[in-house]
Length: 317
Ligand code: NAP
Image (cartoon, rainbow, N blue to C red; front, side):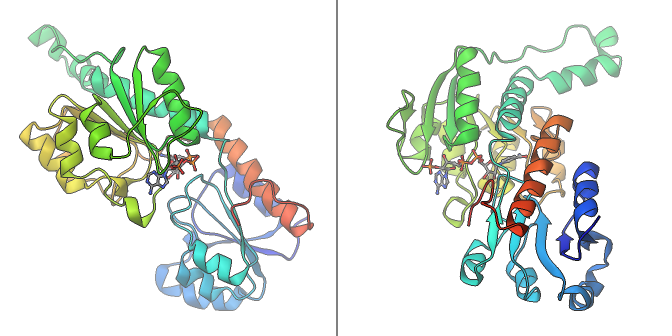
């Protein structure tokens, strides 16, 4: 039976997670409240809301945290923490949990999938067959090889390492940029992202988003990668200066891009849609039935641990 503990869910997540939360807590579905009624809604329920459940798109920002005096924990259904005001949580002693590891393999698979799809132009090829052009116009254009390419990874963390392992199986050489060199890694470390790009044919963004690396992939990095280069982003949209990416694609200064995340998602610039060498997916790198369930179990497990005074399963704070 649900307890009187109030949990504020910021946006629709999996049906399974919503069901598991409703069984245990009094669930407030924040996304169903019109934006102009949200303050009033919170005011009405703030004496029971002790937890916020969000994800990498909508977490717990300063404004929301300030409206919740009894907030004890933010349990995020994501590995990225950039939508949570961590500083504020630290100040207020609010616990924060997330779902790393549960999604690592899935997101790494997606990075390889996007790299293959972009290099081999598989979405464009699919459209070619469906539209009847194959029959009418003959053979499809040649694509680029993925096997054996030099792959540069920005962020050799959990997901970056899993991508490297997969790319190695395709005979790719691996270079990386992170805040620090990994002493146990045999991959080549580049302290500069531009140098990493100069020495890569495929550049994959797999790092966390912080203020310092907003637009870490800028014009200089794109030009260092070069006209046959491919950029893959499964990190966050703001890692790339999207205007520069679009300009490079338009000028032929970039070979292609595979993007699971966009700077102003779900807004998609028309200029990106015009390019056949761009493969897009709607922020779904971790969205398989199996992984979403594992993530949901962690979100609920962390809340249960917190409210029964047990150690958190995956604490950030
Ligand atoms: P992780 O294990 O914490 O790894 C994060 C990596 O980012 C580390 O290698 C870290 O470098 C690097 N990094 C952080 N700040 C940096 C900076 N200022 N300069 C250079 N590198 C920096 O996290 P993860 O589990 O691999 O996840 C990585 C990110 O993927 C998440 O934060 C999230 O944004 C994104 N993600 C996206 C999806 C999706 O659906 N598309 C799903 C899950 C996650 P050091 O190793 O040197 O500290």
